[in-house]
Image (cartoon, rainbow, N blue to C red):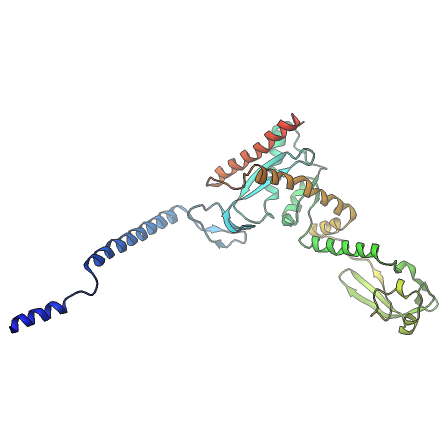
Length: 338
């Protein structure tokens, strides 16, 4: 009986807590996972053996992509995706795509020169001279504003209109000022104040004098002399509504430039000054109606809104085929484009 009891106790002690079939199913699961990890490691080793570090624009190594290393992460309306940046050089008269190319870089600033060179090659194939672009206008959005792109336009003798990233905020503020001028009473400008040489002061349209407050006030736009009026004169002035911009204003300030702003010397400064003119704003407004309908036609109307191939060369061909579909429709509707 003792031996039987001992045998039964031993049997109970060795009884596993987990069912036998569960233990047997655990082994294949871990084995499959280990096999997958080893396969992935072998794939990475093979990839590193044939690919070097991927370098960015700043000369530093950036993250590579084993599946599609020519592509890049870029921000879109659908979030950040891994893909290609499709560029198009569009003719203003017929909305014909003169050059099309994709780049594995989400920023546009470094691509204008390459697309411009492609457009030149295509025009030479059609029989045009090498200097075909000279004297023609080029419009691009602020993402293309860079010294390298401006230099390329200068070398090709293009009349370029490429605004800087702060152009739209400046243009918006200017538009608001113009709108406010149309909807409010006419106010006195600098030209409405006369300089009195005897007192070295300025006289307002109501005959009151403004005294000199500062001989040299430095600002970004230049150096100015500042003149101010007396509070008592402005409070009882019948022309107050035409002179002060708000009820809280107690006196009139007048800024008189004593030095002209420095002449733009860099390409970027020259382009900023050019875009802030009436002609620059008028030319830039045409960009939207030239190029945006082309992308809308391809992506929305034709639903060619993504690439299905891998590798820059194959994606390049696919983007050119998308452009060809756009051209076929142009010929179908309008006949041969001259």
